Amino acid sequence: MRFSYGQALFKELQEHPENLTKKGLSEKAASVYSLVIIGSSIAGFLFSVYGLISWYQSPFILIGCVLILLVAWLSRPRPNRLPKKVMTLNSAQHPNTMKMLETIKEKMGIEKDIQFALSPHYEAYTTEYGWNRRRIVVIGYPLLFAYAPGELTALIAHELAHCCNNDVRRSLLVAHAHRILLNWCDLLDPIRDDDEYYFSFVATISRGIMRILFWIPYRLLFILTQLFWNQSQRAEYEADRMAVKLAGTQNLTSMLQIAHMGDVVDSLIGRHAIQKQSMTLGEQLREIFAKLPMKEKAGVQKVLERSQGSMDTTHPATHLRIAMVQGKEVAPAFQISEEEYNRVHQEILEQVQEKMEHRILDEYRAKIS
Image (cartoon, rainbow, N blue to C red; front, side):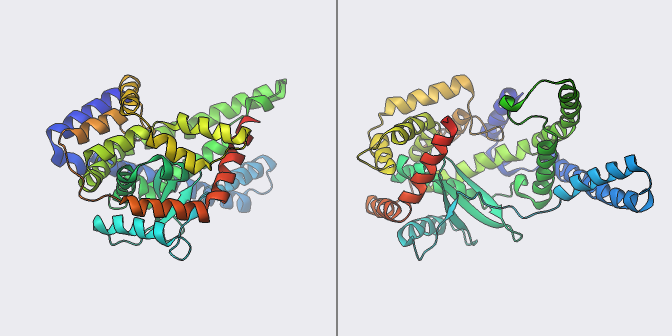
């Protein structure tokens, strides 16, 4: 379904680029559906409170009301929090890095207050946190060294473009409904780790019941994902369109290709985790990706075309994103200078390298142990 839908959307946007920011019935349906999910959670809370007051003499009803109250409480509205391993950046400690990010933001004409942070993973995303839903762009530490100046410009421009898009995934209503369903799935998942499962009659029966109950929120979550699928894919194409205006076609294409080369990074992290290296992880990443031949990037693109690979299920297939921007060659309007790029790397190595690389290696060792 994803393959056929992705191809159909790609053809539609190629023939009618003006439909890129179009918002259809699916977005409205996602909002209505989210209201129903949130309303169900509130109704469950009110019903359980009423049951505890009115039917406290019946032990079975009392237990049921307590369980519903617990689920409703765990599904309450809460501010989105940043992962503990994410490190926020500020002008006082990271002046060169913040200057680079703010310059790209100004070049894109964005006036909104946006925060920036580093993640230990090979990733980049835009999210919101806190009750005031403050926007933050999170960039993976390995990506800072894997990308050349032009590619890094394209990455930052793409993520900043998401701050301008009215992406349905980031609406308060849909975000809360999404979180409620994830909480329900988490609570009802009968087993987290197959290694911890042991066979017994009671365990098998309870596992079966939990699996049936788990199916309900899982299907509801699947439906919500389908409803915002259309808008989320359009938002990715729109973010690419905005990024290519600033960074150019070649830089954006190269950025998307390298984004799928996480195996190169994992291999390098593995070597650092096993034995001490003469260079830091960041320095080695920069050296390896700087020498990366063009044919290897082209090889990645061919693999993506065969596999229909994408960043995740809500992104269009990467080779379609590349084909969309390659339809018209655009020269870079701006990119980070080599001098500024070197200053940022030096600052990152001095300020956060030890903490960030320690987190990366610790996580890798924990994964393989």
